[in-house]
View 1: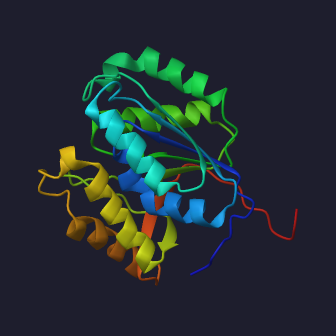
View 2: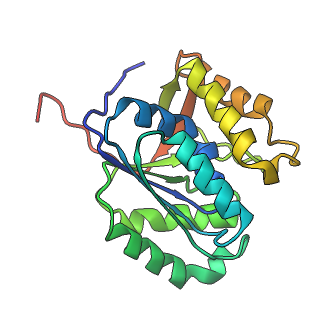
Length: 216
């Protein structure tokens, strides 16, 4: 498998429809970046959950996943499950968010996600971040919509385990879901690891990218 190296990552933008989407889809990658990239800036936007216990969970979890990073989290008030009815406010919020960030890479849900809120966000992100590397993450859940990842980010075993620990610790409102447990999270990470010859990994779908050979 060919390995490409993304160097000089200074700022990332992470977007989720609900509190916990970002942590589930890209938590291990965030933890790795925050550990390896000194002075990393992380700008997060979550569409729903403001002024609730879910927002508190989100802020604490992302802080744990981004130790020592310059982290800013914005949580909006779009009703859970009704994002398509709020197309205009969401598009405006994304454009406002875009004006405040300059990311080297953008993480968001992938277009084929079965949940309407995730899917709408995935469709809108490339219309705002038009010249950026957008990596679509997968959100483990009840629906049978797992993508076929085209890019894998290998995770050290301790990173994959810490991601699972953070999810269970900081999102107590979700632990009653039968899929929200350590075995599920580590199982998916192990599967993606098998697919790229590593112990664990997170898988992403690339929106669009250019490849340059032979230097700058």
